Structure formats: structure tokens, C-alpha cells
Length: 328
Image 1 (cartoon, helix red, strand yellow):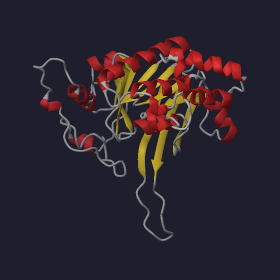
Image 2: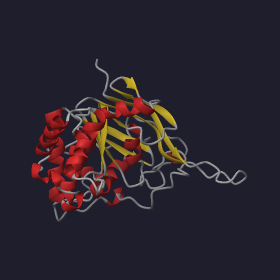
Image 3: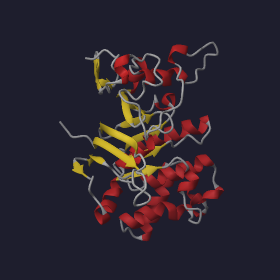
């Protein structure tokens, strides 16, 4: 049996918790990601979904070693990269790249598009100028960009074009793994579809593996192979995309699906599944099940005992962390 491309084990990311003054009070640490474990197979797309503030982006940055880990280990293609630093980490980063949510903020406004795409090649490959020029032009064509755009600056492009440039920059090194953090949230619906198609084209062409971060469960359904639902720093449900939609087991997942827009004007979401209240503070998460303060199905046990991810009845590859879900 081959090992997964990405293996995350017990990932925990904390912020704060240090005294600002030698004798001052110690502020509470914010646990953005709490003991999260999962695998991603080579060539697979795993979508991580949830509300803003649930830890999705922090999880993505942690996998790329851009967020400090408080605990846990990360393996890339069987190699432990948790403790890499300096030149070793920079060399490993050729294998994993990131597409950020705001393409305009992530592109240097003073660099022409050609230099933006050429920079990763110059840093990591040492190719001669002719080879770099050829690679940049080929990547632009693969991303649906006219090679005549190479001498333009980011402000001369639309939002959709800038996102294509950001995706091209991430893919130009032919990495094994790409984290895409809300890559279409700032785009209108037609452009979102185009960007998803581009991700699919590049995946087929270059054999890419994705972690796709999104707050829109319905948007990633047709693209992702598996879906992981996060709530307050923890994965509460994970499984094949179709299984998660057809047999959503965690009340939070069911609420997200019920809240998705429907083309049927007569459709009315189930009031029993409607979310109420605000996301609790990660500095002081609820005891027991972290969702119990907003769950319409809460029971006394939920307020005391934290549920673990376990296989859902009849689906060994579909797991949920809920006391009320029939287990395999």
C-alpha cells in the first residue's frame, strides 16, 4: 500500500498566551487548530470547509510550514518536514505552493507578470534565461493567459485574470501539492466556475494534488474528491464528497448544506437545522462538543464529553465526530 502524499498527525496551532509585561497577566492562548489529523492521497483534492474563523486558512498555512506548529507532525511524500528550517525548508518548498485569497494583494504591484512568474524558476531551478522565458510563456498559455500580457503590471488586469496569474505562479514549479485558500471568494459566479475549471485542467496536465479551502460547501462539491468540515479548530466530519452530501451526519454539516442557496424558489431550509448564535471564541472553546452551544440536537452528554472522529455506519471512509451519529 502506498503512503499518502500529505499526512498530518495531531496538528495544533496556538497564538498568544505570552505575557506582554514581566509581571502582567498571561493572556489566554488562541488555539486556531486543535489536534487535527488527516491524509491526502497523491492526485486527490481535499476541500476544507467551514465558517470564517474556524481555522481553515491556519490549517493550510500550517501544512506549508507558514504557521508555527505547537504540536503534531507533517509528512510530505513520506518525509517528515515538521522540523525543517533554513535552506532545507526553502528547498522543500519547491514541492508545495499556495494560492492566496486576494490575488491583487499577493502579487507585487511593481513587478511585471513575466518577472512574477519567472521568479520561482530563478530561485529554485537556476535555468538559463531562454528556458525561463519558454517556461513562463507555456505556463501562461496553460492558465488561459495571452503571452502578450507578460509585460503588463497587476493593476492592468481584472480580478479573474489576476487569480489566473496567481495560480500560474503556484503551478509553474510543477509542485506536488498546492493549497488554495478561498481562491474564488472575491469573484463573481461565472468567474468562479472558470477558476475551478482551470484548477481541474492544471490538475490533469501536471498531476497536482490540492487542499482547497472554502466557506461554500456547494461550490466545492463537484470538484473535490473528499470534503473535511471544520468547526472551531477541529474536523467534525470528513469523507468522500458525494457521501458527505448524501449522508451528512454531523449537525453542523447538515446546517451548512441546508443554508446553501437553491435554484428552486419554493425551497425553504429546514428551520430545525438553522444555525443560531455566534461562533464561540477559540480562546475559550466550549467543553465537550465544541458545537453544542449552537446545536439544535444537543444532549447533556454533548456538554461534557468531547466526541471523536469515528466511521459512520455503513461507510468506513466517512467519519463524523458526534455522539448522536450511528457508528460503524
